[in-house]
Image (cartoon, rainbow, N blue to C red; front, side, top):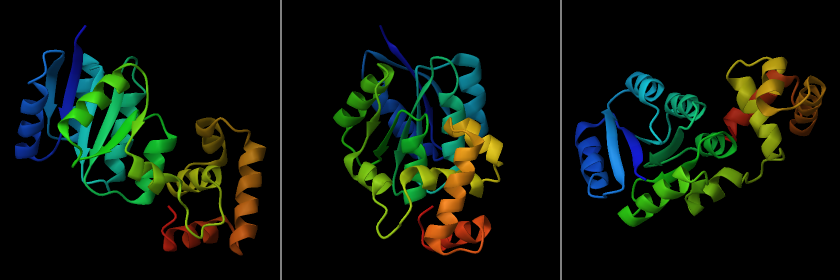
Length: 201
């Protein structure tokens, strides 16, 4: 059985090169090649590719949001290819529904292997990116607390955070209160500022 793949890259040359590389494999069918996040989401909604390969610089949260929306579609999985990544972007991909994330410099065989694994329902993250996602340096907050803060930074309410992270609202409030205490912040907004200034999110 073949694997239907959509390629999203806003750079024409790299998109064409990636498409040509994938088309060398008999078991992979490139059913779409798009150059914008809106086009990627529209194509995925209409055609439901097995795997959406999204190539980006690695710092654009909007691209990760599009990848999450595509991943939420039935039978669609997403694989991110990034050149350089901020810790918060990697962590968001790692803790969300995104199936995998590789560096753009990965050898072709690694990319093909990742496509197959993702298609089979497994998650594939580059080892260095995984370390970046879980390493907090001198951050006193847990991964779950950082996830709560990242949702707060997007403007989500306590109810929305609870729903998205499968927690009770009371647990979310407890996390926020604990973070304020750990960081010596005045309130949750100040805690968010401290976390941003320290590049934890």
